[in-house]
Image (cartoon, rainbow, N blue to C red; front, side):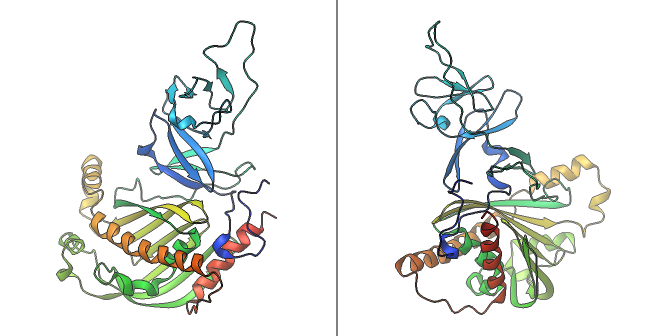
Amino acid sequence: MTSVFETTQNNDVRQLGINPNHWYVVARSSEVTNKPVGVILWKQAIALYRDTQGQVHALEDRCPHRQVKLSHGQVVGNELECAYHGWRFNSAGKCAAVPYLAANQKLPNCTIRRYPVKEQDGFIWLFPGNLEPSVEPLGLPEWEHLNYIATVSVINCNAHYSYLIENLMDMYHGHLHQDLQAWAEANLEDIDEDINSVDAHYTAQSYYKIDKIWSISQLFFPALRKLHPEPLDVSYVYPHWVSTLGKDFKIYCLLCPVNETQTKAYLIHFTSLNAFWRLHKLPVWFRRFVKDSLFGAAQKLLDGLVVQDVQMIEEEQQAYLHNSQRRNYELNRALVSVQRLMKSQVERLG
């Protein structure tokens, strides 16, 4: 396989590439229209667009004529047209038209790469590998479920993806979020590992208990919160992350690593309404209205957590760039497992 995805020879986790034979999230569904949008997934520039039927396509973001970005162009019918000279490319990446082609000329025999994409659970999933996909995207069953209220926050950090994953797997860093905290007194109980995931099981004191209709107000008024014990489970399901706090909250972090020092991700927070049994008896249209109306209810909380985490993650990256030989004194054994999984996933390419 060509080597934008391969790791460096020194096996430094901070310079690891990605295993491309997985599905990554490159955009929200709402971000992709019939106007092309450019994204980057591990050094690969990709143009996303919708055709006249609303189907999403992903092509290498370059016109082979002069190597400019196709995402600067427009969609004409079902084809992507370059802004520079008007060359058009179909969804398979083949040149389909040149506006000034002479009668005695043939279309250029040039093709750009087409990427498999799926639109699922409100996001655009892309498979960057050269193999045929043998796995499915990570599911978000709560996205359409009427009993879950979603909030989405975008993470853009100037750091290697390993720092973000380690931050998410390390529940001891709750000290950072004291003014926005959802849990306290985390204690790592157990770790389960296999070739694709690391599951860390903590116990913690949760600030929220969503068991009565008025209890949702805890999300907005800190004085109403009371600590109580809850299981706190966090999982690195390569290449993404999933967490559950008791029965009331579930969070996903869907990754789009950009390069060795840039990572984009989507953090999706779900608040459960399962405890409100009377709500379940109401008409579906009304429950859908409640779900849609409350979308983003935890935005301030989630965005605040992201700002605090990104600051620390970027400081870690800068410290590494300043002196990569300095040793970290790590006490959370879950992070050892996480680094082992990252390395093994990339090593499988060899």
